Image 1 (cartoon, rainbow, N blue to C red):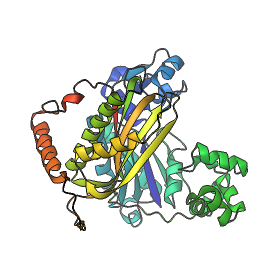
Image 2 (cartoon, helix red, strand yellow):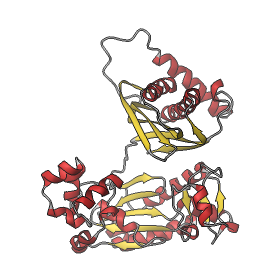
Image 3 (cartoon, one colour):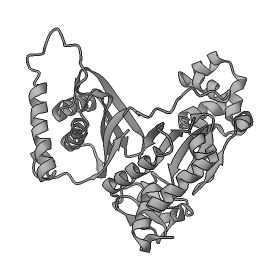
Image 4 (cartoon, rainbow, N blue to C red):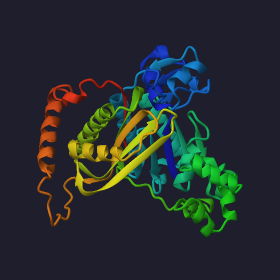
Length: 394
């Protein structure tokens, strides 16, 4: 059996734990500007219909006595490390999938800790005893069902799906509950009159591939209770990105350029801190009407220089025909690997390529920032930037 552990209203719960005045109150963790969005909402706030990613101004309309608390990512990351340390006490096979959730494969651990349900209860009890935080756990024979189960009886829930229950559970599982099913996919589902995951079995693999691409065969496998995904203890980081929600919509090129530069600096710094390089750069734009696009480029060589990331991101932006003002700008990198992994050298080197020099400069600036603070050295053009930022590390 596989366990999926999901912390309850993680950021908000930590703030309520650390500040008794916030307990049993509708609390959200977010910025306090008109353009901010809800990062996490306490369960008291959720009773008013407030949810993650909702604009703060909308949340305030739903609850006039809403309490807004600024986030503290360093504190949340520290608590996350404590949670993961607890999980590895029960099994060596722990796969963190985000700051507040992880899979645990307990195969072979029953002799030490009892049944899967006993192990789940022991994990919940240990987390609460050490951190005063509640968690919800799903237990199932396969990963994707364990994740769905953990969300069924929140908060402080424990849901077990027995192997003999899998077929019946899948046959009635609403298709929108399956991870990866978005709005566009749901439109296709409605056209095919697919309401549950079990309905997928009515269609042949060719049609499913035609309609849903690579997701088609996976959906059919899941509908038949097959998920070959294993719990991977050494979870490979897939991407690093940063987003900036602007205080007002913009379209001015120089203003956009500044934001892209700032995001590139932060993404590059995080790459170097983790001794990683990237083979792909992408940008994300969200417009005034909340529609959004992403553009990406596969690189000829792996990089970690902030300047190189900036040049690639700006080049992607220049190719976009702007028709609306922008409310959010994001820069990110994927195709990550260890910086010290050997790579095949290019036969013809670009004489104007100053990659190594820029990486040396970046490393020197990183060292100064680490020693004296991030304010000690920064690009002159970034000195006026003060928008709300969000950073993602997956």
